[in-house]
Structure formats: C-alpha cells, structure tokens
Image (cartoon, rainbow, N blue to C red; front, side):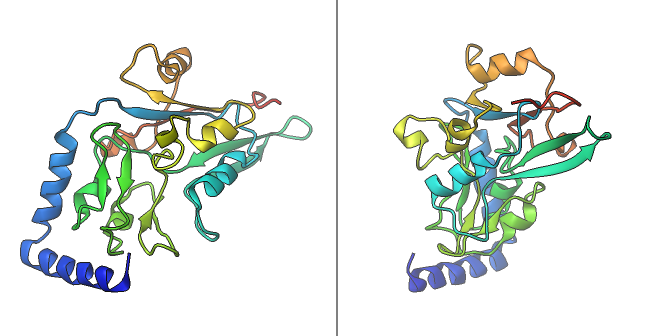
Amino acid sequence: MSNSRRLFLKGACAAAVGASGFTIATAKGTAGSDVEPVCNYALVHDETKCIGCDACSIACREVNQVPEGVSRLEIEREGPFGEYPNQHFRFTRKSCQHCDDTPCVKVCPTGAAYKDPKTGIVSVDEWKCVGCQYCIAACPYQIRFINPVTKAADKCDFCKETRLKEGQLPACVTACPTKALTFGDITDPQSQVVQVLKSAPSYRTKTDLGTRPKLFRIASQSGEIKL
C-alpha cells in the first residue's frame, strides 16, 4: 500500500472511531461471525509426535515470505523433565488459533481483520490495515504482530493465500517429519482431522474465554517423543 493511501485510511479510521465509539467495528465483527462457513478448517498439533525440529516454522517463513525478526509460527520448548537419561521435553505450538468467536475481528475499525465466510480462517487484508494495533491488543493468545515490510498486522492464515490457493496443505503440515500436524475440515466427519480428534484426547487453550479456538492439541507425555 502507498504511504498516501495508508495515511488517508489512518485519518479516516481515527475519525470513525472517535465519532462512533467502535460501533462500526462491532457491527463488522458481528456480521462476519453470523455467516456459516462452507467448511471450517482446524489444525491438530500432536505434542506426542513433535520433536521441536522447527521444520514447520522454517517452511512457514519461506512459503509466506515472513521477514526476519517476526514469526507466524513458533515452537515453544519446556523442560527437560525427569532425570537423566530418562528425560523428556514438551514442545507446544504458538500460532493463530483461528477462533470461531474472534476478538481481533470485533475491534478492527477498518474491516482489515476478518473471518473468511467460506473456510472459517481468520485473516488480515493488509490493504485495509492501518496499523492501529487494536487487534494485537485484543488477541488473548498474543500471536499477532506488525509486519515490518507491509506495516500491517500479520499472523498465521493456514497458508490461505499461498498453499491453500494451490489446493495444497499448509506448509507447516507438509514439512513436519513426524506427521505431528493434521489439517482439515472439522465439519466433515470423514476428514482426517476429525478422525485424529476421535482417536485421542485433546485440549485447547483459554477455552474459558469463549473464543472457541480451532487449534487442538494432543498433550505430550513422558517417553512418547520418539523418532
């Protein structure tokens, strides 16, 4: 986006917010959440299979041209637990949860943050983003950031504008050497992601907030991380 266009939108945004007290943002967020998606994409991270190799985050950066210094996807490490030689680590994924009820969308004054009505994927239209950072403040999972190149809010979008457009799985899913990631439509009872969720207990983070996140996790246990 040109600087003049971004400056114009910033001015318009400020005026709208001041005059309406976020009524525009609330209306946009509510309208978007009322549309039933054609499919509803979700991701399962099986922590029992994850080895913390970072192949997923590297693939994400390359495919989506994520600049250095920021990241759409990180693998956080905890441990070691236990005593040598019977030690183990826990690897958890930090990325957008693609909530069904989206705090980030509700606060966006320009409509840049939105939930795709066809897929349920929470996305950012960088052309509309004015960098106000309201969505960053509203996200309870603290995963959004300002892209230093585009100057717009950024985050994981399940490779919606890259791999998914080509009919392929997200880059992180394809790159994982231990098949710790499963992606698919949770409204399709025959999908692989539904079968995985049926096969093992899973959990989601901060479900008490009512955001209904679609990043599911199968909890790691001692001795289960193997190559």
